[in-house]
Length: 236
Image (cartoon, rainbow, N blue to C red; front, side, top):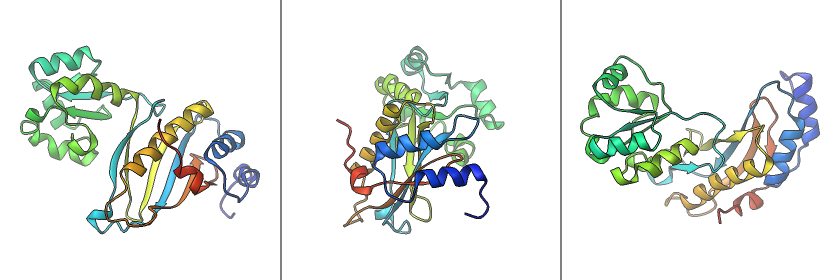
């Protein structure tokens, strides 16, 4: 393994080349970890899709029951009762003229933006600021909701939402939590992601959607996942 240090090589040797069931892979990742910081545990899935075709693309959002391990700050675009509901529900920011000006000046100290449908036209001028940072509210990702649904949307965002989409090589990359999480929590987060992918299989894929899957940590080696076992994970 040229280019890797002794600790990485030792961890890869301990993990081995075989395929592991999801719970075994999580356990192995925790056992061989050597970094001095709380690494992110990541899932990488190679799909059979051709991203050049619209009917083979995937873009969904999975809610992680145990969060991502990062604090999530939520901006809400709403007025009147919706704005009051957002504040009462724990939104970190609710849009006003001063905040609008800050966004236009380049400020974006939040991870999720949620809007009510009536606000989409009004925040259109912010699209070029929010869009390039992936923060523009979008119905497809559950970030455009009716005012009465703001409390649920804010709670879901605070809990931890992971956007699932393929890159140009048809691979889905997704964090499932931090290495410090209990194994059960990591497995439940992983289950939520797999359930979402299984449910959102693109219409253009007629056969199997997942080709291979790997679990890894920020600094650790890839751990091959037993695909049949992985695909059986289902939120009850």
